[in-house]
Amino acid sequence: MCMTVIPNQNTRIAPQLPYSAARPKRKSKKKDDEMVDFVDGTAFNFEQGQRARKLFAAVVLAALDDAIADDKKYGNGPDQIARWARSRDGREVLSCAGIDPNERVVKGLMEFVAKGIRTSVALSREESERRHALELEAEAA
Image (tube, rainbow, N blue to C red; front, side, top):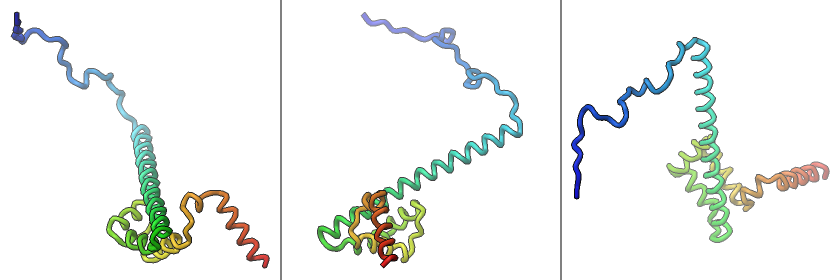
């Protein structure tokens, strides 16, 4: 047994309300409220930009680690990172990370890869203290 219901225009499950009726009416905005909203929006956009910059910086660090691994395995790490940094994608990633993609930066990346120190080790506190101690010893000598 099959039953078909033909809808009637007078029957509704829920009353049709405009979207604005569901929320309470706001008081009129003051000039100070507009400034607070502007500052909040600007701060939010700045934080979003900082998070994006950190994300792209992590991509640069990953590219450096890959080039160091290639250098240990095949011996072409500095050439690999230079090719990546000069490519369109590499320049775009460096720019988004807040790094100016110029030739000086490329040379610095190549020197970093040639040293063969992984980025996680180079950024650690122990490595920083060790390098500082070596510099102090070199100055004393």
